[in-house]
Structures are given as structure tokens and as C-alpha cells.
Length: 369
Image (cartoon, rainbow, N blue to C red; front, side):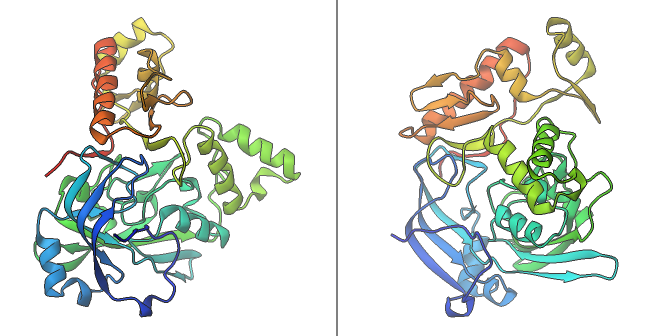
């Protein structure tokens, strides 16, 4: 058995590694830290067209039973074993400044998203700093259009390069062709078709007009604390310093995805968007209900719904609703994936019974062959 780790920094010494390799009986990384293994996995150290079109690689990728494995930050392994998978560990990236003050990046899919955030913010480039401390890889980011604190990966995406598993060729989709939307994309809506191998992003060497952005809960106070502690004006904050503020705010709410207990998959349910009539009905019962008008209806925080149903801090054995943030479900060690999923379903059912709203699970649930 060989342990596989997801890329967290640019590849060094890549020329000494084979373009691809096979690993048997390998653990599947996942931030919930549920027990899961894959019987056979293809590991891609190189994502060039020459490697991907190698017959044994292309055949493996074309097989619909081959699951794409990454950092496991948005997945619930309800089964302890899957038969076959592919993992990209190629994690090189390059940056090119433009005359207009933009920085154009090309990033291989295996690089950790947080590692890219730290590297770019550390160079003084603006654009990704609000995504600090989000687990997972760069390749997984467009899949669900990850976002936090008013920033989505869609805001910085120029293109996404994929291997078409069915047609066996590389394609590059411009941003608009990726259909990036709230926690979704064409890649998520067409499962099994695309393997994201590289992402093009555009950052800026200059701050945005509203720098630093503080519209979200906790940020204004955290930035004020930073200013008082350093004796510097808020506008003088660097992207790296803002990323550290984001880190502090996130870690106050969420378990550390890098290790230890509890494990979590971050926000477990989508924030539902309901019809205005449904929102009005709920507001009559709970006048202090937070609500946000959005295209298509009214968005209600899922965490508020869970807390209103009396579930914040509820624990059953090794699984629990976080006492710090009701939208986070935790694994404290020793639970099976099936037990964790049953607990999540009980939370969803309780919320529906109490409020009439059925929450949608955000992570992918892998239930077996």
C-alpha cells in the first residue's frame, strides 16, 4: 500500500518522476476522515496530452467506473471501498504579468487551492485572498465553483482545460462556457465526462476599489483588530495579511481540515432559495429570520434553519452538528461513512419537519459500486 497526498505546492523534481503510476489498495484522502480505500488508482504526475492519450491511461479514464479523487474536501465516502480511481498530483504553475497590471496564471489541477492562495497573496497579487483556508485542489475548485466571503473562483477564471474522457482529447473552455454558478458548473452537471487538468486565472497587481472588503459577518471587526494591532491603516493591508485575517475567522468556525479531530466537509448543506411566499410564511413564524433577496427567490441560511430546528451541537456517538457553526457536520472518529450519512439525513429530515424546507446536501455522497 502506498500513501497518496494531494499536491500542496508546485512540483519540484517532476522530471524524476514517471508521467503516471499505478497504486493498489490506496487510502482515499477526505477531510471528514472517514475510512475509505480504492482498490486500484492511476496517479498522474503529468497532465500533458501525450500522457493522457497513452492507451492505458485513456482507457482507464474512459471507463465510467473510474472515479476522480482529489483532496476529498467535498465528499462523503458512505462506502469504505471503491474499485478504481484517478488522482492528479501534477501541481506546477506559472504566472505572466500583462501591460494592464493583470497577472495571468496557468495552474495544474493537483495544486492545493490554499497553497495557491498563499503563494499568490505572498507575492502581493490580489484576487484569491478571500479563498484562504479552503481545502481541496485547484482542479476541484471550478467543479463546484468554490467561494467564500464574496469571492468565487468564477470571478478569477479565464479558462478551464479538461480531458474529455469520452472523446479522448484535451479541450479548453472559456469562462462563460464553463457555466459556473452557485456551487455548480457544467463539469459538476455532466459527471464522468470531464477531467479538469489545468485552470487559467487572472489576478491583479493592484487592490480593488473596496479594499479590504469587510461586508461579511466578522470581517469588519477582524480587520479593525488587525489595524489596531499593527498601527496601520486598513487600506494598507496586503493580500497575504488579509488571507491571514480570513484564516483566523474561518478557524473560529470550522475544524482544521489539515488534520486532527473532528473531521468535516465544511458547509454540509446548500443555502436554500425559496419562493417569496414561503419566505413570508416563515418570517411570520420567526420574525428575526435572516433572508436575502436573490434572483429566483429568497435565500435563507441553512445554518439558521438547522439551529432553529434545535440541532446545533447535537451529537450521536461519533457524529455531530458543530456547536460553533450549525452548517458544519463533524466526525469525531470511529464512525462509518454509512453512519455519518444516516446522521446527515436525520438532520435534513428534522429541518424539513420543523420548517417545511428540504435542504440539499452539498458534498457528493459515494454510496458504493
